[in-house]
Length: 213
Image (cartoon, rainbow, N blue to C red; front, side):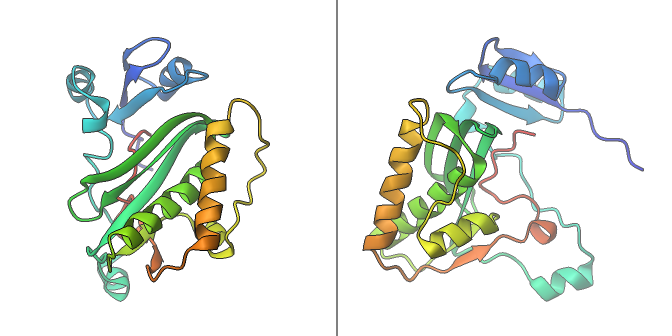
């Protein structure tokens, strides 16, 4: 069995900022910290360099397509359709600090980002990201497809609901305000955009992945 590779964690915003050499140490800095900003790196030098830079310049930048499948299996699936945008969400806990974004699938250029929100879930973020992507593509009359790696979010969008078990409270008001707007948009708009499941095993992490762990 191969040994898990060592990672280093840059925290731009947290209880303490800096570079940490374990996920547990990183979690202590971001837990219950509104607007925490953090990401993992393969080397300590890369993590230190990132600390001196801007968080938004680093999220998702080092992700490359890597396949878990054989060449023959990959041929059956094919390659991603680059005439597309990809969306993803990240949450440091369930619930926890949540944000979501959309990127150009090929170039990984960030097209939109929302958050961080004080209390949300990954599923809610994935749902909001999809609806945000749909709205942008419709506004631009775009024929791009929309990739997500969340079957749950796809189901919620199809049913025009956000079937979360998270209860509303003062901390997550901003999240549920967006949820209400998203549901209202789905109920009052039609769209031709095709939503497609991102094949993680074939193509690696979705390009919109935040690359935090």
